[in-house]
Length: 153
Image (cartoon, rainbow, N blue to C red):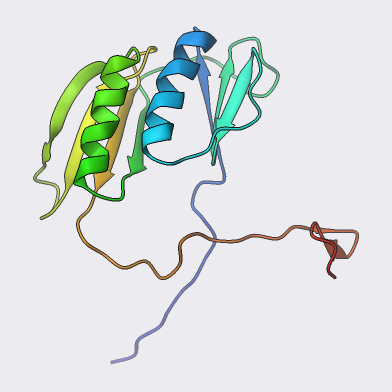
């Protein structure tokens, strides 16, 4: 039997989510991302980002297209306690319950909580059980004019 490893790029480069009320969305996402240890950047009155997720108002030039709604985003948690803390933070900052923290039948060890954000999107934090990552994250260096952003070629 032949075994082959395949290593490819990420499936999603980034996601743009349009929100109605930027202040409410900033409060909600700042709270849950604080718990999930995901830093927020680029914040102004019309947009902000966290990792590969960009949130913008409908009049922002950063996110274009027709508003659709009913999105589901699932964020990785490091353990069950982090899922529980995500749920509490979301509920305290404008979220609405969409599934209490607990085990789900998707696979053994799947522990998650679901909340609706201020726009009604289904937001989840999930812990898949004890595991070992091959790397903490994928590091990408962009080459600009033959050199990387860090100045090395």
